[in-house]
Length: 272
Image (cartoon, rainbow, N blue to C red; front, side, top):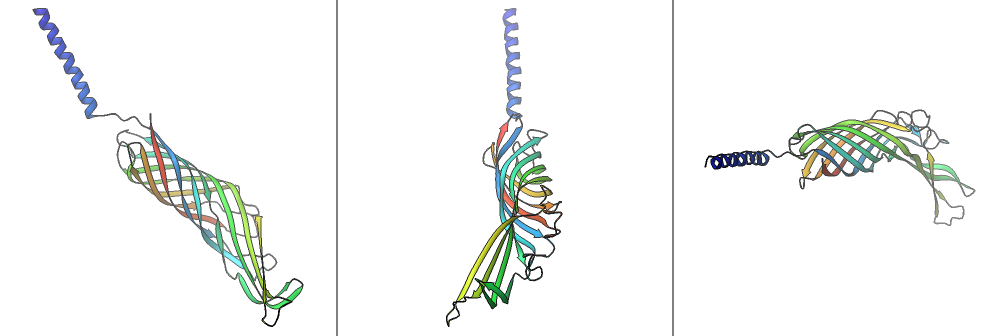
């Protein structure tokens, strides 16, 4: 009888310890941290800042451009590493590999002239018009490293946040695209003064374009969890250039390419 009582008491003790451990596991679940990975993409509202420069080297004072603006795409892959308490994620290290286009049109200061003597098809017309336009195809392979802070803690990224960090771009393309249109009275014109129009386009490499672009990026984010593992993050930010596009040419001086950008991240939480 005594042995039975001892066995019964021991059984109750084991059950009590198991029940307490089970209750603690339910009340304080431990979420294993890992990392988030997925695609990202969006658009750049590109802004060029430069000194005035000639579009046509043969006419350095007649056709000039300065500054500019345009819309260009960006996108690639993002990886986000949570830091700290796995149940209250607020701090993250973010790495990105992106294709980043800074292509844009330059703004013409005096891109067109009228009543200009022009030789077209061997005939000199005293009243022809010339119109010029210039844009740049500019793109980089970009590596971004950022620190992200979310204002709302959670076992998955959630709510508003901010992200800042440096950006290093490796030049992929840097070309000038030039368009010149000439309208003149045809030498075989009849009494109706028939006009002849010729448009010439050309593309040339930007002289001495720098192979590396350094910048700082700051952005606002908002994490939206579709499930504990799938997170979408709309973002808007500013890319501030440190280096110039072309640092050693007489064609364009003090040329910087910056952008206000917007986009969206889609990330999957791979838990460790």
